[in-house]
Structures are given as structure tokens and as C-alpha cells.
Amino acid sequence: MTTVKPDMPDAKIVDFLNDHYGLQVVEVVFLPIGYEETVVYRAVTEDKVPYFVKLKRDVFDENLVTVPMFLRDRGVQHIIAPLATRDHHLWAQLDDFHVIVYPFVEGHNAFKVALTEHQWFDFGTALKGIHTTVVPQELRSRIPHETYSPEWREMMKILLERVQKNALDDPIGVQLAEFMAVKANEIRYLVGRAEQLSLALQAQNPEFVLCHSDIHAGNLLIDANDHLYIVDWDNPILAPKERDLMFIGGGVGGIWHSAQEEALFYKGYGQTEINPIALAYYRFERIVQDIAPRVQQLLTMGMDDEERARILDGIARWFLPNGVVEMAYKAEKTLPPELRSH
Image (cartoon, rainbow, N blue to C red):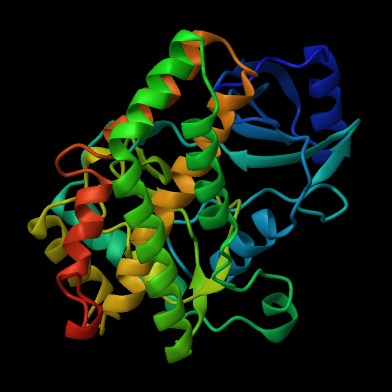
């Protein structure tokens, strides 16, 4: 979902960046690539040096900037750390926006450019570095901990019932109802599986490590020199390492589903024991957490039909071959016998 340019003069942003960051910016260009309450600009200085400027209007979590800076300072490669202000802060306030500035890295995400063998290795190395970094207690206390919340599983049950009972008469609503009718039993299975695996995983009390939490191909940036960066640290979490590893071979976006890619990744990540219960839980849970809020959006009628059609199409794609649902079922095959479906 792209954002609309805010009603704020570009000159005001230029002056703000110069005053607070001392960058000598001469121009800012709005980039329609933000999401919800996040607005993005490309700023250019007198010396033609570009910067990536993020304006966040929603609730601001300082982990967005402190965690990547911490990792960069600990020597973890493939991280784009934010710039500090003149007052040595990692963000600044402009009206009702929190402003964060990064070096501008020209490139494409890994949905648009397939990872090379070397980049898969680098990706594995970088993620292992993140997972094995010892987080000091002061920072650890500020980072969310995994709670295995049932929130979206319960919401999905409510939404299924709502779609079945309420007559939806708009074209997209009718398509949604038809799709949900066909997939109702399968969606209930996905929810039930996530619940079952959640309980089994909590009973094991697994070790928590620092995780990115959303490490799909869209959050890997490949620059012009084929260098790889892990970006968008909006929701770091302390959780089992499988919180991140579920994406490798997980089929998000219809890619990253081959055994060859997994092998290349783990050459970089190194030998590690994968908890099959954790891996399966996160794949099932992620599907529920993706479907439920999107169905909720479609039922609120708060957007145009074109956007609603795009969301519905996205939900349907998760059930296609090599998609996230098939990869979740694949993870089931590695579960202990007592947890396999019969």
C-alpha cells in the first residue's frame, strides 16, 4: 500500500534536514513507497549526495533505529544504520512526524532481483551474526519478547463466521465470500494447527535470540555492486531463531521455496539444529496473521475497489503451488510423529 504525499512544503523538510542534520540539502523528492503512516523522501545535497528520509506518523518505537545501530556497532555487516542528528539523536521530531535519515542505497529488493549463490551465503552469514549477537539487558528489556499471542487466530475465527453469516452485496465482498466459503475448512485447519503448535512450542521453553521478524525478500536490498542489506527493522523481537528461519524455504511471495536455496543459505548461516515445531508454528501462524487483517480490511470498505481487488488477489495467491500454505504443509512433514496430521 503506497502513501499519499503529506500536505507539507518540500522547503520545510529541506530546512528541517539542514537545521537538524547539517546536510546542506537542496532538494527532496517524495517516493510513493511508504506504508500506512510512513512517508518516504529522497533528499539530495549540494554535493549530489543522496539520503533516504523516512517520516513516521504512527506510534514510534525507538527499536526501529536503536537495534540496527546496535548491530552495526557490534560489527554485523549488511546493516544500514541511521544517521545521527547534530544533537547525537537517531531521530528528530517534525510536526507530528518522527524523522529518520539513512544513507540512500540505490538498488532493488530480492523480489525483483533473484539472489546469487554468493548473496545467499552472505544472507546466511548476516542472519547468523544477528542471531548470535549478545544483547545487553538494558536494550533487551526494551525489545518485545515472543508471547505466542492468539490474537489473530481468534480474530480469524470471528471473521470466518462474519463472512458466512453476513450478506455481502458489493462485487469484491461477493468474491471474498465465495473464496472464504471454498477455503473455510482449510483456513480453520491453519488456525487450529497454529494453536496446537503454539502450545507444543511453549512447553519446550525454547531459547530466545534477536530476530528481525519480517525477513522476506522485500526486506533484502541489493545495491548496484550486488551488496546485500537487511532493511526495515520496524518490528525486532526476541524469539526462537526459527522466527526468522521460517522465511528460508517459506514461499513468501511465491519464491524462496527450493532446497538449493536453503542449502546455499545454510552454508553461510552454519550448522544449526532447526526446531521443527518452531519452524512449522511460525509458518502456520504467519499465514493466519497475514490473512486475518486483510480480510478485516476488505470488510471495512475503507478503500477503493481496485485496492480491495489487489488485496483479495494477494490472499488467493498464498494458496497457490509453492506458496506459503504449501510450504507450511511441507514443514509439517518434519514434525515429531505425535504432532503430524493423520
